[in-house]
Amino acid sequence: MRLTVDHAIRLEYPGLAAILFEINGVRVENSLDDLEHFKSEAFQRFRSTLSLETLKDVPALRAYRDFFWRVGIDPTKTRPASEALLRRVLQGKDIPRINTLVDAYNIASMETHVPLAVFDAAKVEGDMVMRMAVAGEKFHGIGMTAEETLTGKEVVVQDDRMLMAIYPYRDADFSKVMTETKDVHIMVCGVPGIELARLNEARKLSADYITRFCGGKVTEP
Image (cartoon, rainbow, N blue to C red; front, side, top):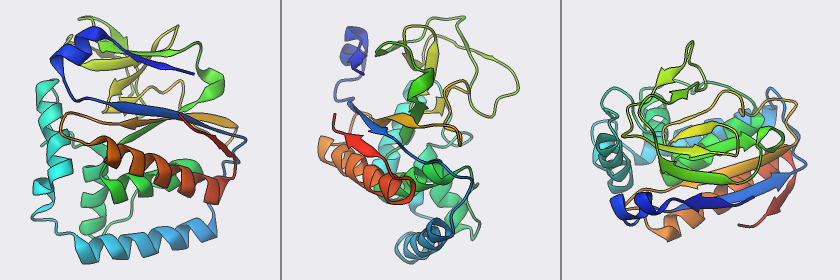
């Protein structure tokens, strides 16, 4: 599996980078006691080191907010994933429980402040391409009750058939990870202002957490 970034993206957003890697042979469950304990410890750590009042000013989170504005997404209404999850925790709330694989990589995302996109490999055809959206394109994301019509300002990722994500905002419903999933493609989503070292940290941490709780073998990018 390869990810190709369109030349127009490189010109419009210099410094944007993403890392794609695979984990094969995972075991996805609805929940796991060890993971719930691990999540609770992580939440306590986040609450002791971060403040709700100053969260938006954390440099990495600010970089994703700035990128959202540039692609037509209001980050005060739709926050980048890492920030949205951290805000819930700092407000004393739990994060939504999805399944063990999604929950595990959400902790890595919160810890590194880097959004991650994960796709069921069995539902992906061919390689991935990152490009600018075409005005009028339709996208059905996870949690959406109806398709969204794109404006053409968005950055999107597609396989050989259809759109897989609005980058780095929302993944498509058709390729989401479920308990039947055995192999996954994981995209570490960077934006201008995020150094490659941070993306590699997110890659390593997410691979560690996923394999710790879901097993599997990592194929390096």
